[in-house]
Amino acid sequence: MLKKRILLKLGSNTLTKDTDHISRGKIEDIGRQIAALKDQYEFIIVSSGAIAAAKQFVKLEHNGEEINVKQALASIGQPHLMRIFQENFRELGLFTSQCLLSYSDFEKEQTRVNIKNTINVLVANNFIPIINENDTVATDEIKFGDNDKLAGLTASLLSADILIIATNTDGIYTKASLSSAKPTTIEQVTDLSELQKEIGESKSSHGTGGMQSKIDAATIAQKAGIETWITNGLTDNFITDAMNNKSTFTKIKAS
Image (cartoon, rainbow, N blue to C red; front, side, top):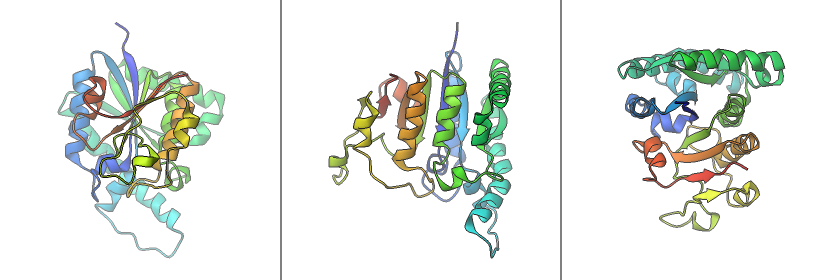
């Protein structure tokens, strides 16, 4: 049976559960869901969180630009982040691999082919590629989209069936309901220009994306015929609940 391919994008707020450190419990929750679904689905992960992981261990002294400090923190945190994934996933019988990419990699045809071939070999051999921006040499992710755009580009390149973006809300809310105690989720949409009218400018506390970068990622995915789900990664079982219609989230249909 041909498995469906899911590109799962995990932001810093999901991985920290809106705290100041990476949550092993959340990574275990993600691993449990992948283990439960692995007979029907194959997973590729785009994960932020390297800077958040480093902040648990170090406070860097510096006199230079903040962006350089964040690059240094990413360098320190990336091995810790991968170790946490590896340890938690291995206990569930899941194997992981690391892939560091930059946006320039998607601009060269031969590099695109190399990325696709390598990741396809990993997935075929039951390894879960965990992709992150190569923050030590690139600043785009740190300054802008918290890997949302990288997730959209990767989903497109690897012909994913679904792009799941985990965030800290129940999808995208209507602008009119944002001031209420219980905001209303836009549950299904095809026309992204309509969705654009509903979003605000706010960004999350640990992430750098906000909803605009998620719509940008969904735009890339939609052009490639890929459906995007924006789900609340802070809740347990957010992937399986979305699949079983047990949760509220935003589904952006493929065009």
